[in-house]
Image (cartoon, rainbow, N blue to C red; front, top):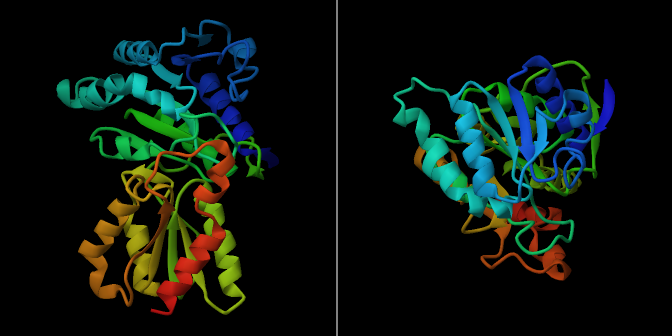
Length: 325
């Protein structure tokens, strides 16, 4: 297995699906000759041609409209929305149309659209480029939402997303693109779209996180271990649907939990996870449900994002509070 960055793993996965299925198409702003603003699709147009990897005008609503129409006629589109903040321009296409169409057609038509979009802070991007907007989409029935936290899952999940007959929002974390490497098989493999993963075993407290915050939770677990506090870390991977079985099984073992997200406390999926735990596992808890999230404010300018984004220290402090309750 080669060691790949997160972004190269996604490129490898896209290469795989383009090679496997001639009905797959990649399109979006600058994804063709330039390979995308982050070079995620670099080289794919040269390999598969301009008919299968091509640029579009700067019109997100048009990109989604094209994707929906293509999926209706037997294609498997992979549109890119250049930054997640730009999904607002395509909101009707995603929420008002794509997510509802399987129901509208009585299950007689499939809508295998995988919408790729970068998001997340820590790279000092401009306004509307870093926002965590998953809460808008996890509250949309008919739409799957996934976000990998490491290169291995990035490749496996993108392949699973494209091969799924359901519409999928595939969230790619900007900070992770080139900040980490992992062993990634050259051959094809898949990661389930609806399963969480225990990335670190523990017995004293459960830390539930997703995307870049998984790595922060792992760092917090390392710090806690120095005081013999054993933290189990769960990567949700899928934000809709949420794999509550994995979360519940961990709580039955540790009896304490902290939920972590980069998004504002009022956003993200932390409140959903907390509600599910409160409904189903309240009698298994020995302490209140802890939550770590960004402040309920507009995403700050780049100079302040280091203080705004939750980090390992924040997670460690909350975990100690819950453990010592």
